[in-house]
Amino acid sequence: MPNIDLIFKNESASRTGSLKHRYAWALVFWALLEGHITQNTTVFEASSGNTATSEGYMLNLLGVNFVVIVPDTLEKIKEDRIRLYTSEIIKTYIGKRIERAEEEAKKRNGFFMNQFANADRV
Image (cartoon, rainbow, N blue to C red; front, side):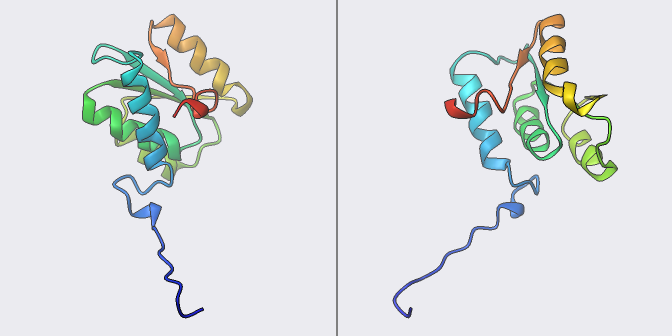
């Protein structure tokens, strides 16, 4: 088809190398606009790596504390990438990540970003 131009976007070329970079930006932007996040807020997220890396990058730019709850089977390379942008990683059983993130946010008076439940808002 000679009249069709194909344009490819390399999502892995983002600052974080994550496919979730733009999605994380949208989540953080939504939470800021809705007033869920201020500089004094600690944000919590349940993730297996990519979203946490990107959210951590965005929140780090804003100077906001970020705690990630990951499965206890997380690969070291993903953990190392997340650690570039966050101060705390909590490992837990994979089936309990979301509940643990919600519990930690409540216990520490923070905000649970919940990428799964809030996807439709961004």
